Length: 429
Image 1 (tube, one colour):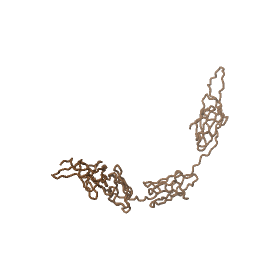
Image 2 (cartoon, rainbow, N blue to C red):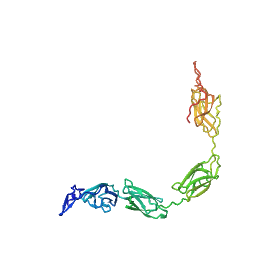
Image 3 (tube, rainbow, N blue to C red):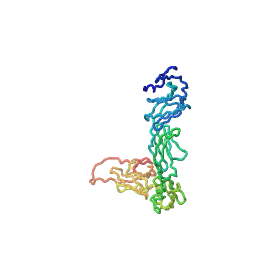
Image 4 (cartoon, rainbow, N blue to C red):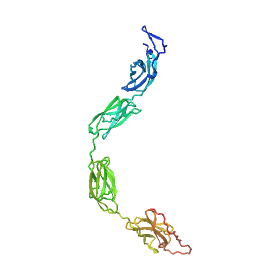
């Protein structure tokens, strides 16, 4: 048999032409149908089989041009026709669909078959009672889980052939392992493919015993800032309250691991003995209250400001040595500096002690003048001079050799400078 004869779309013959087959003359007849009669009403792919349904001119044939053999499918008396064809692969294809009256073409259309993505369930997870499933399938089709309660929820497979949905396991299933089927359906809700998996809801986490871990009941804490810790039901709220019902620390949530922690600071005027409680409020399972007592340390008092004083040496006094010790009173924590009229530091800077006293010692060189105009200054934590005292002392003369000498000479007395009023050098310390 000549294959090309049967796959030819149409034979251009005169109306009166005839073909002799086996001694029998078969005459062609003019086309009687409007080519617009050819319509495709349904196109599906199931298990790799393409099914086409449509309408056409009764008594004529439809042919899907996909190569040898090109089968003819008759159009029924009611104008309907059906073609089935096993696709050669899962790639996209385009075919020509022809309607023929005898051997004459009577209309045609194009059929496009999208690439077929194999249906598969690629993953499923369970969190609590929620199943999340995903997979692949034919773009445009839908997937649904079975069994499920009404209303049925269908998820459209996207253009890349991927799908994903969530499903809540009903309470009636408890924590039993159930087999779930995932159905792929076309737009007519016909099942095209399916797969299955087993899953069970996670057992509910039992409520943790509410407790206070620190501080222990009856303990004395080391600071007025106190950290409270304990255990409870994840997601519940914990309050830390005083005897009056006021919060002494921020409200917090119990963490996923069942732990909770919060920190609060008691005011300086708060009583040393504190009667407290912590309670848990939440979803019903995690209720609880723990009462306890702690003892706070006494509130720290701020240092009392003490006016700057110079005790030794006194103003105008004659000291016994060129190594001089300076002492006095001031505000605890402030810095003390002793400087010359030229602004030179004559003794190391020192800090006023907690009892308000300060002392520092410095040595003058042999070349220093015997009369020294000095200033003692007090500097606070902000490096601000809070007070200063000007005073003078007389140093002893530097000792000379024991052998008398002769000769005369002239010279000038040492010159002492004057420090500008209200200034002090910058002293680090």
